[in-house]
Image 1 (cartoon, rainbow, N blue to C red):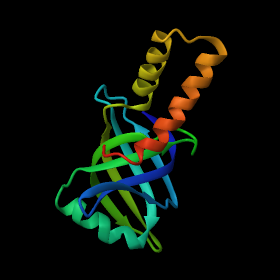
Image 2 (image 1 turned 180 degrees about the vertical axis):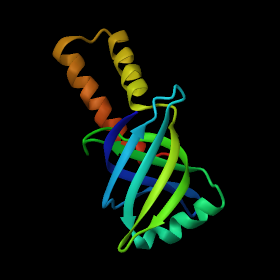
Image 3 (image 1 turned 90 degrees about the vertical axis):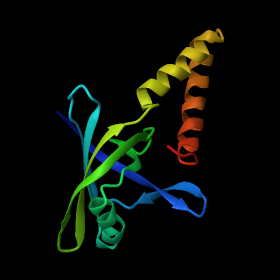
Length: 149
């Protein structure tokens, strides 16, 4: 298993007829790659107690949730995760949420490979390739929050 710092977490919420990601202000968090061959990850997020009312029904009803988890650095493209709340621990001022999930289709590595393949097929190379690759990554990072998982 490999453990990484969780630096950003967003949860998909239904607002009217649309689904939108809401950023959860983390007090701290970890994300663990189980390295089990099934692409399963454990997320522990430390949140303000106000989020207890959001997560308790999800735990009790075993509802699958869709998340965007940013790992290690805020500049990284968030990973799309489908998971379930496994436990909630109430602390003095915070709650600790444990989520078991899988990285969804279009994980950052697969997405980067797809972008690079497309740019190479256009015949781009050198500095032009690098510039277009970075531009496309940043464009997709912005768009991932505006679309449903």
